Length: 136
Image 1 (spheres, rainbow, N blue to C red):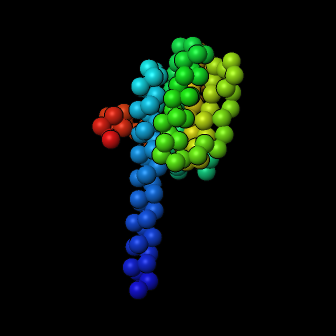
Image 2 (spheres, helix red, strand yellow; image 1 turned 60 degrees about the horizontal axis):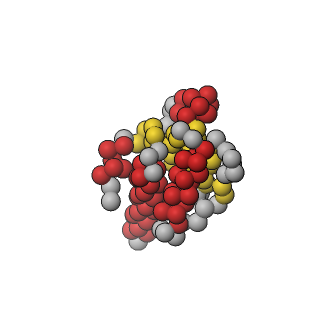
Image 3 (tube, rainbow, N blue to C red; image 1 turned 135 degrees about the horizontal axis):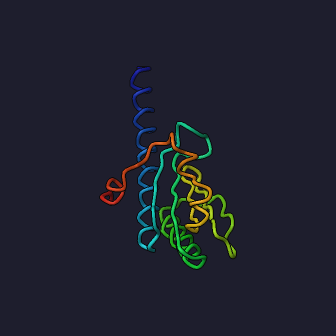
C-alpha cells in the first residue's frame, strides 16, 4: 500500500514538472513571436531555490523590451499562472518577470553582454530550442 502511494506522488510531481516546463516553453515561444533575440531557456532547478527555469531574452531597444514583457505576461496569464512580480518596467534596459518556477529576464543586448547571465549560470542545463519550438 505504501509503495503505490509513493508512486502516485511521483507521478503527480512529474506531471507538475512537465507543466512547468511547458509553461517555460510557452514563454520562450512568446518571446520569439515578438522578435526576441538570443532566446535561452535554462533549467536551474538543481542550482537555486529561486526558480526552476530562467528564460533570458535580448532586445535592441527599450520599446522592444517593454513589448516583449507585455506579450509574455499576456500569454502566460492566459494559462492561469499569476505573475509574482515585475521589476524594472518604466524606461528600463532590463525587465524581470517572476512567475515563481519561471523567471524571465528581458535585457537590452548591451546589458546582456555586460552582465553575462548565461556565464553566471553556466552549470545550468541548457534546454535545446528545438524542444520548445516543437512543443505545442
